[in-house]
Image (cartoon, rainbow, N blue to C red; front, side, top):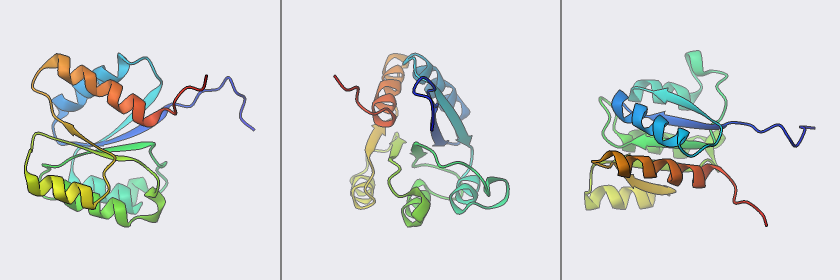
Length: 145
């Protein structure tokens, strides 16, 4: 049994090919003051290996939340989302999408895939920092009174 004073870090998997966006995301999460571990995968190929539990990801822990960029090189975010939805071990893990895309087709596909939240990629630093709160609220259970 785990001691109540031991707090586990929330494991957040980010599938994003833009390192600057991941850097800003990490800053936004740190401002929220909760324990987290950010697992960053830079490509769709890495993401597929992680989802399938292949190679270096054979024993990778299941994340508490997955954040996927829709516009990835080689494999689309939609490809990754479909793979996640088909993987039994990721059932119950909230999946969010962040993107600068505002296409109606993307919105329909995301609804079909049961995405927990769509997060528009912000253009300014202040809006970027707000993403930290959105993610914190998704990974941490609400405080009980």
